[in-house]
Image (tube, rainbow, N blue to C red):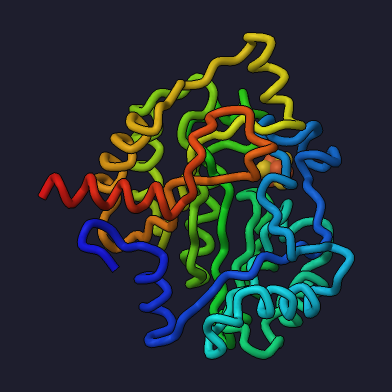
Length: 299
Ligand code: SF4
């Protein structure tokens, strides 16, 4: 807990008082409608799922096995720890009927030690029938939906081939809120054509919605993505954040986000051999320490 913003552990402490909670990523074999032609093809230009899938997570294993492996990975230090099953890879509300999706989530929820589930998805893959099932599930176990919003600019959303608008994000958040499901927005700082002011504009618009959390990170250009190709050819430019300038932006983000909304993180650190730029060589906790030192120095 800190005095400047609500971090993830404070947020979890509100939901699970006195309990240590750890997220466990699950790859349940979902695919992506922005790749298979259902919504779009080619995927979002920055996306390479391999850059954010942990090593203990194999889609060939059942979700129960993946959770048990995750528990073995994290549980040695804190045997009393509880877990959030995090459906992270691709679009975790797509490609199955509502009944199959809900039974998959319930399977994860019923593994011993699991206290909640987090479902990562797109704003255009949340039909009302699913929200109603999630609202039921949310009465038995904590459910959090994490929506990839990325930016509030429809121009940028087109440029990065997201194939949805900001209006879709607003609609999804509004319906999730009406269903009393906790919602987080995933945002990326420094998307092509965007300045730090554009990032702040997105953060302001996100915070005007009834959300519980935002999850930020700097744009990373990673191998195996159309973004790398376009950037190398000079067809797309991105804001050349230095760590110092990004730190300054995060200070402004902290001052923009109201205390009731959690800022889950500021930095992504994909495997170094996959990242082409920026190569800051910094872990999330190291950046957070720098940010806290800066905020402390400003008091
Ligand atoms: S970021 Fe999500 S929606 Fe975009 S291509 Fe990757 S998995 Fe699909």
